Image (cartoon, rainbow, N blue to C red):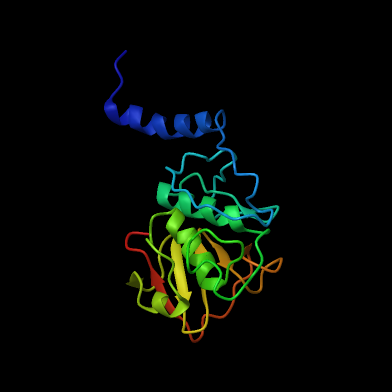
Length: 188
């Protein structure tokens, strides 16, 4: 019996997702415990327990990765999860370097987007007003003005305000986008 190449491609992704459950990447002990966070860019392969839905779900303050998420979106979620619920808010946190002991709004958004290779250096909130493309993205949307920035990633809001805890976190609750410019990375 011969398989057509398209049949093999159709089977490859579910098989790869199943195999990732066998090799879960370790999270540094300092992550989420108030230590210094280190962003790492991966290939989105750590998808054990991914959600079959297009939208991410909340699980104990962390976002699950949708199985159909592109690798760069998965990497963005993984990066945000490393600093969710555990790093406090501080003005200017995450600006001198992605690696910090606390994060403000733009530091947290920059950290997450750096994980997905969407930014090369931390940006202040006002810079996100002209970042990427105009409008909402299919996976990632950034809302920015001169004083605040937050993102919606795979259906969840990534923010430092109106979230559980006192620093970067995820929320199912939307907030008003009035007064914010809406931007997204090209293709996402």
